[in-house]
Image (cartoon, rainbow, N blue to C red; front, side):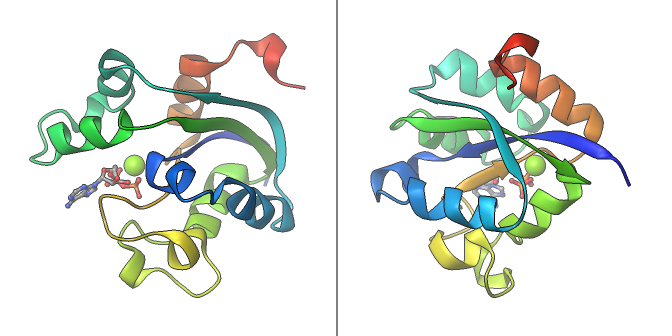
Amino acid sequence: MAIERTLSIIKPDATEKNNVGGILQVIEKSGLRIVAMRRMHLTTAQAGGFYEVHKERPFFGELVEFMTRNPVVVSVLEGEDAVAKYREVMGATDPSKAADGTIRKLFAKDIGENSVHGSDSLENAKREIGFFFAEADLL
Ligand code: ADP
Ligand code: MG
């Protein structure tokens, strides 16, 4: 185990419903620390670039449209085993399969509009953090 950083995005469905504070509370209660945070409205180019790995998947167009529909809150979370830990705190991609107490179980509607993103590996976390933040932003 080691101290890691991971990228979180609170998605448009959650900002629309004023669930930002509720989600941040679950994150902080889990022990993860928010070391950088910004609210922003993603452009199509930004959302497409961020989700580049999914560009061949059938839901890619829908995903980019959703992610650019309204503002998101991007943040960097730090803590012991942060990448795996935040995946646990988020819950399964499909909220109907997510465990009790997870963010997706508490706040999300369906597999597309599932309220949060979290990096899935340390390598992807580094790339995703660099997509939105400079090293000097992480405090
Ligand atoms: P996760 O966000 O749990 O890592 P994936 O990387 O598989 O999940 O997918 C990225 C995002 O694409 C999901 O969080 C969700 O917003 C969207 N998505 C995934 N599967 C579907 C689907 N079958 N239909 C619509 N959107 C989907
Ligand atoms: Mg993923």
